[in-house]
Image (cartoon, rainbow, N blue to C red; front, side, top):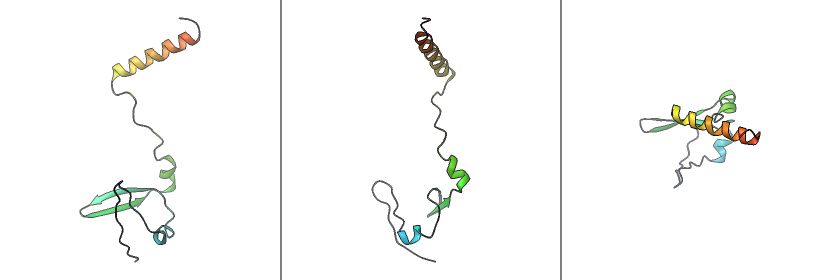
Length: 83
C-alpha cells in the first residue's frame, strides 16, 4: 500500500499525488467521514453520468409555483399578442 502525506488547502481542496491518481480510473467520489477518517468512494460510471443532472428545486411553496405559472402565462400571452 502506497502512503502519502497530503493537506487540505485554504479553499478546501485536497491534492492527490499523480502517482496515486494514475492508478485509479475515477474522477468523482462521494466522501464520507467515519470517526477520524475521510473515505473516498468512487462514483461508478452510471452514477457519474447522472451526477448533478438535477438542480435544486426552484420553488418551495405552492404560492411560488402559482406565481411562476401566472408569470409564464402572462409572458406567453404578451408574446402571442393576446394581452
